Length: 316
Image 1 (cartoon, one colour):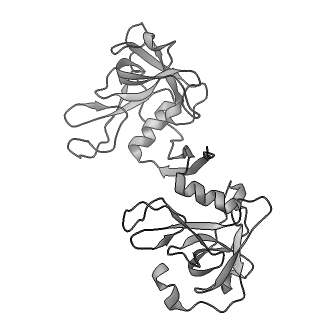
Image 2 (cartoon, one colour):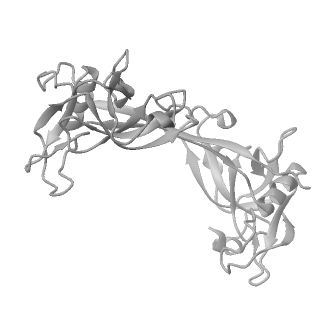
Image 3 (cartoon, rainbow, N blue to C red):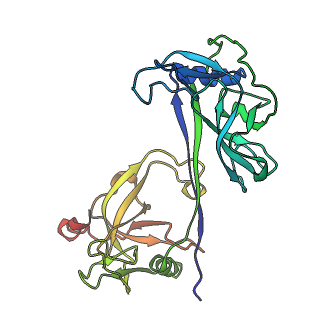
């Protein structure tokens, strides 16, 4: 049975945004253990607050404090928390309508098990020990059997207001290639590049996808291409990649589309062995392999004359 290839991948970047007066007051209030909503013209109180009425689109600025106690309106049990979620043990995701609010706030409920959670149960905020002006200042909700808390009556102006936040966006996933790409990867480990030919239009696609993107017909006929090819177009990279071990390359460098000999689709790769300002369309290149690698480290000039534009103009 052929080996099933899998690759764990992470896409991550920090998302920085500034806050308007409503969101700034809300997050600053959380830092001070105060929950603020915003009142609409018809008297509804929205928590979390928004800057514009979702019904009328009217701008909203009338902030009002609500209680840190409330009622669960709906819930779902999370039996296996992931990295970065509010609690490290199983918990319930809940929508909580805080006392004094007309909408519900999504957060975590610390409960011993799903049997302890129900719609209509009473809960209250558990504040984080250290607060910085973020939704995580509410550590979670917890079951509560007492009377409804009253708003503390704090003013709506706080010193050192939070004016911006940095929210890390991260996606963890595992990629498993199909039959065509697995064959392509296995061939690369033997320092060969293979594509697949469409039985209808006869074009050879590298890397193969298992079907012709033009005709929509399944492909199976393997065709070895290259190893040499032609630079069809390129860009000069001037920003160094951060936190990426396999891209620890000094800038500037060139990333190019390369049409391998015999292929009808250009692949992309780094160009080395030549000053970045001498890379050009039509440059003839060949792969450079490193010991134990499963794919070329980069492509370098072959020393051949540049390819004529007519030979690669359809592959730009």
